[in-house]
Length: 324
Image 1 (cartoon, rainbow, N blue to C red):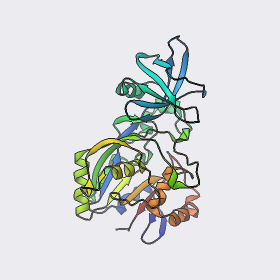
Image 2 (cartoon, one colour):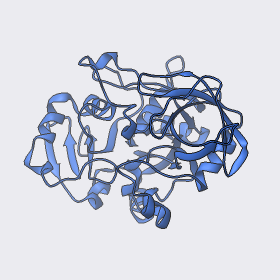
Image 3 (cartoon, one colour):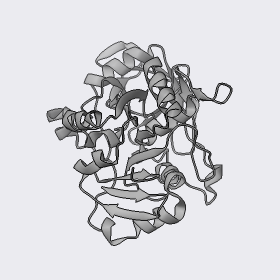
């Protein structure tokens, strides 16, 4: 784990088990309890033609972003029925992007989520399908419980219950949010295609902040406790639920397309633990807001990072304001 100290401009490399050394009494560690589902499934048309559909994202009001497996053309008003559960139907509405993506509507969103929790397939470079089915727990954090993410909220995978208990023993407070990662990195929905990072937009994602989490964080902020976000998803969720009117975190649920980049004023989160990211992604831009661009670039070009692994199952970095 790389530790970036923003106050001192310092970078250290430590074993991840040392993460508890950076926790002080009264700090809050917030996790995302969403868990991954499959995103490729077989449907049939009204004429019984089989087609593999790739679910690339969720949208509000039971809308989906889908494509054909081989980027084949879909047409408005096409209706597809899941082969294993024909009661679930998906109707194409219109083209969503220039990348053979289409907006569609599903009548029963919750039924589709439940179906994909146990059926379908994975199609991406980070998740080996055969291993995913054989060792599903290896692709989920120990505390994940709510199905709905198309991509693994990977920062939480580093933690064990023993490590979480050690943070609690130091006076750290544990809290949870839910943000269903609704756009897969592999399918380029988060890739930055422009040179001006401020112009980037991202698709909406569903989030929930429970009342218990809002209470813990608001109390901690009042008592000078720091808020540690475990992952970019937690960061975006908490910042989305912040109420400027009441100057506090509000228990809420809904959809967010919040894009955090250098210049954004953080209201809730003080410290960030996140995996090492590839360039030209919104994850990297968000990380740059926390660390500062200069310190982040220093970290990514340092000798310490040469032996590190990137992306979902790679190493991580902890960005703090001080060493406590």
